[in-house]
Image (cartoon, rainbow, N blue to C red; front, side, top):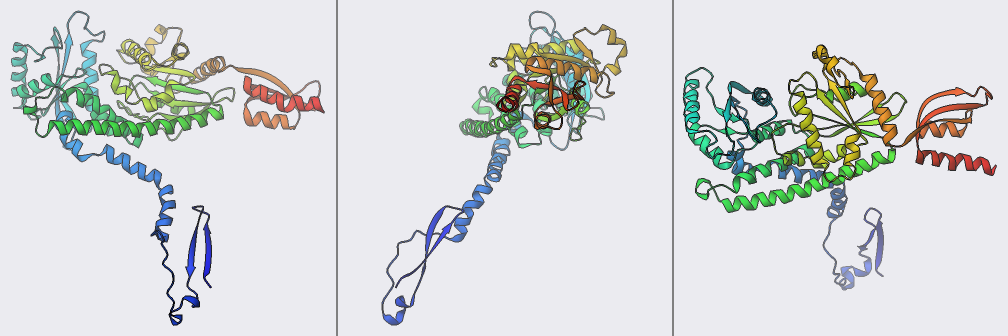
Length: 511
């Protein structure tokens, strides 16, 4: 007789046979067991299926990290991106500006130079040893500077090199230099030349901690690399230019797939937040305006560590807070904006910016102590319009924006000049925060169609328990006409109120 044992694995929902050889198949009977055609497998391989399911996230994480830290890609593009090293750099900052015409910036060259210096100082071990502004008729010349100005700059650099702090890098503080411009300038100055885009990339790489941020920074590099690669003379490139094109295309495809997963993951998180029915407030502003500091002041969150640095925040993070009416709210911290860089650099952070762009209310934080505050305000508003271009609710969202004048403690003399529509605050000194909370709550009630209602419910009944669990209860007191009832002042949505009536009003009607 053939002795069969059946074992059903619940884990894999499969059955497999374990054959136990009986005495019937023993050699003493001289009968050989039949040949069984069984697919090769082992318990280890079966168990590894569960392991693969459990570890799939870890494997995806590893795949993403391999995309980010692609040694061959970094070697091929290191010269284009001039990535910072641990040895630091002594920087000569040159701020070119157009003297007149439609290309003239609304921001003064001195303020732009100050911001350029701040960008360099955001990179560890980098120092600004010299700085200057240079007036130009246009930024479009292949040589950028005229012949006379170029000779003047070369003489300056020769003098600098005789001093103790020798210049090792030139930072031309303009959005993106063309490849031919950069190539020419590096030949003439005999040292690396960077523009604002490449400096910002340096800072972003340093501040990117999470996998999401690293993926988005990696994607932000590609438009810059492509803009240079398309103009490279094959004779000037060390290596196979065709291979670089293939590698860039492959990297872009992998990053797009990885970022699609990020967007899908954030969509799920967003869906869960929507199910909780918490209103959201996106906090936006120019870089280093004090956004993170404000959210910390509004929420008391210990997880937030504000830093006096440009681009200190790269991840969109959610932080729970409570408004005066006990209304729970989620504040979204966002990456700061900065002028004179292409919008497509910020668009690479679209996977996380989406969370902010679908908020119920936007709080725009201005650094009121900054001399270029008006220019920064216009820049942030214009950038938001571009980012919200495909959002059908963009006009509504921008009209629901609350603007605050932060750091008012640093310039108290300017407080009287603030427009009535702008709220003066100091996140660091906790000035004006209660007024801001009231304003946010009022705006949220309008936008989310929440209502303030007084609901009369039985004392200690299921109705009060339901309201405490599902809505914001701002106040309660005994009914003066009947102490068996409670008056509950609540903030409630139309949907929640309909649910409440369906559960309790209809039930009491049946009784």
